[in-house]
Length: 338
Image (cartoon, rainbow, N blue to C red; front, side, top):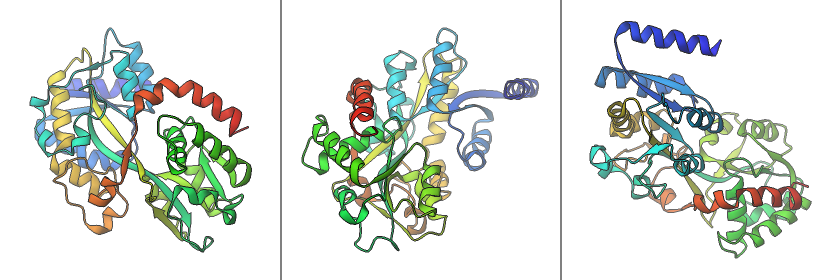
């Protein structure tokens, strides 16, 4: 059915004679993305966006299969998948002279992959969320997860999630280790699993039920999931831990051999523009990487935004994390999720 609908969309747009740019992305919140990005792109460039939607793994697989005959122009990935795409020569170097808002971006968004193959269009942090009605002493640190009053009330993400490796890194840093040597982190997380962890989660949607049922009182959470948790009406609080929060920068890249590279640049310029970044932030779709965007306090509370929060971010070495991925998964399964 999906293939039939895709074919029908292609045929319809071809019959209308409209210029097109093909974009691979997730598809979360498409109603607001259409409002803020798709429709305004048509207005500005007289061009349709054809979306190929799916998770990171599925989309990179399709791009790999079409490597010699690509049908995608621009792609949006989480940092680890963007690096995989770069390492497999799937991406085109970006000519920053063609990026209109380049000088308006935060420095860490200009080349987050470190190889000129991606530009950051949104940022999100990794902090802690806890039930304020059930936990009397406020949570302020990653080390608080080990407190005796939280026995059997902590949930951690699985190692295979986006935030899994960051959990190891932050445990290591909190207890005196370095980000690149995880022995302390694995050891402390093994202790935590034996005493305080009630379950490991794979999706933020699972956490909502766990918090609602009172099974979980505290958990590390990606910032973009905070809005959905807060909407439950539960007495929950977001915490940027005193040791810092991991920052993730999702990137836009151009596919190597893209059929319409000029259109890809148009799309990138549109997505990074102050107007689109502002609209996405105000609708709580994406936290901005354009430093000129001003967000009112009401929306900022749900975003990774503001000087204090941005300065608190710790950006991980995803090249290193990709190298140790297999070893860390095996070690996690043997020592922590046993």
